[in-house]
Image 1 (tube, rainbow, N blue to C red):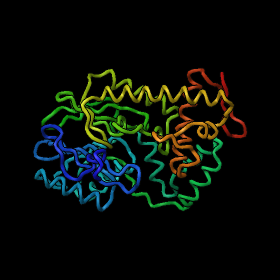
Image 2 (tube, rainbow, N blue to C red):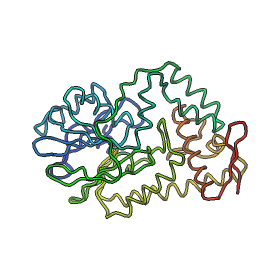
Image 3 (cartoon, rainbow, N blue to C red):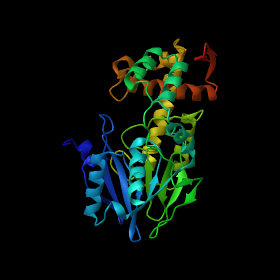
Image 4 (cartoon, helix red, strand yellow):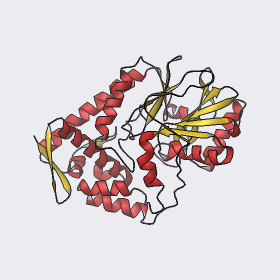
Length: 340
């Protein structure tokens, strides 16, 4: 972790504002290698924004970070979870079982949790279904081989409280409000401290990467439309300090939101251009685009990232249809796109 880009991953409790500490926790993959949780002083206890992945190493680093600020796992009064992805939600649930802390989550995550809690749920089953409609049989087959076909024990549970709409979740010592920001997931919420200008952004706004769109088991019909609308919603607020789930704290949420909106506008134009050159399905269009800052070809990526790329392409294509820049029709259950 000597690279300065990775300094934010260093373990410990890092003060980002009076009474607010960022505690990065490890993740078990090669892409996103850490997730920030934020410990906020809440009277004689703590409230945490996000909980991390339920891993022994993550629990150990969370406990060590809390010790730095004179607290322990039993001092966590509640978890305010931005969304139900494993790296944000599962450790909050695991610690609730031990210590009785409360877990709050956006109401829009309920459909996905209902799928995840089914005893017969198989990992990535919705993504496999969507890939079929994208004409992405090679990616679909690779993902099935990667994940296996057996149901998995889930460990998923519902929260203690569903967050509905924009609502006050005020702490003992500071005001805090939840704001729904669907897109990354349909129930994603951010938490805003208006008094000190802090945006606990989860995965809605990330400083170095573009968040995935609609990667969940019960996605909305048009996740990219929802995401861009949520970006504009937060952009219309006064600028705030960006406290992201992945990456360092930065001073301006507005600056990064502008970059993300510009990225998706450019991506929509590039996607439309590939269709105009003759590509038809989301899989064909994804193969006609390049990926990541290194501009990889789709075929050079691993199956998991191919899956994300194809589904992101489909999300852009559907917004282009909504904008009447493309038209779409289904042929043998595969969606085909053409210039309008």
